[in-house]
Image (cartoon, rainbow, N blue to C red; front, side, top):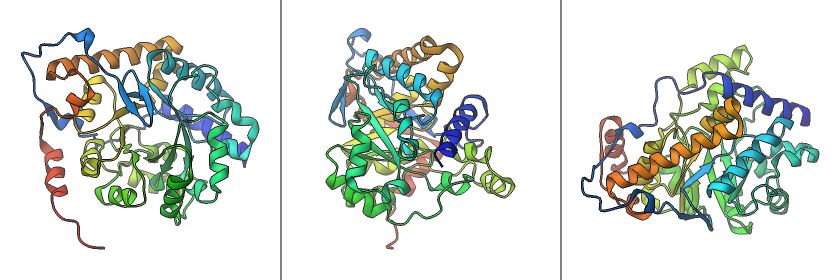
Length: 356
């Protein structure tokens, strides 16, 4: 089983780097967030304050290099080099699913980045189905072994049902989240994996005590697509059907906005600083970027990833200037005009949900 998980992690790297696994017809809908230009910003570009406090830690920039990998020897260099960039630039850093180190403790080293990132916000990562089967102490040890400041529990039913060796039983996840949120000594982040979080789901998470979410909406990498390319014939047909399944990132941000979560991380198709700013205007505390960073690293190594992230940061700072926002709080309060399908989502979300 450990070898199988490690092989899958290596396949995930190959597919996400080299294959066309984006959503085909669905976008993040962030392009429908029209920001209002400020011709008289009275700001200095270089003095705009991008710092933010997320999950109890301070970031210099509201940016997280989102969880991508671990559990295969190739992941060791990727995680350590990207974590070092996060340390240097003041970003957060997410680990890939730690399931592999549960199966084979020898793979723990592929997730350990603290030597390169001693002060960085590091997010651990475990699948919801795996966490259901674990005692709180086991989950805490998983986090301690990598020095995690918070734990992402990823919710991925669409990915799992297409994955050749995936799980099909998602019972007990709500009770597990309630338990971990109250018992773990670090924050718990309920994180989707490219399919977004609905208003109903957000309300249920909040009622369970969850105060931190990563919407991980549709429009970027489709993890259904990734698993479709690994699937057998029958599962491949299922994956083709559900390739574009999910709630667009912008719509998911609108869905969770009324709940006033302590932290809202926006991942899912964030490719540049303008999209990052749009997500923040929709209420995100920080944004996460994964696949574009991995592809830049695969192409040009550490410098390629650093150049890409520096560009995103500059684009974000520029957008803040152009909307007259001196800091993240002002950006979150900035005016926005929603168009097209995103305006339709806003109308839908204004309607009462039927009682269950």
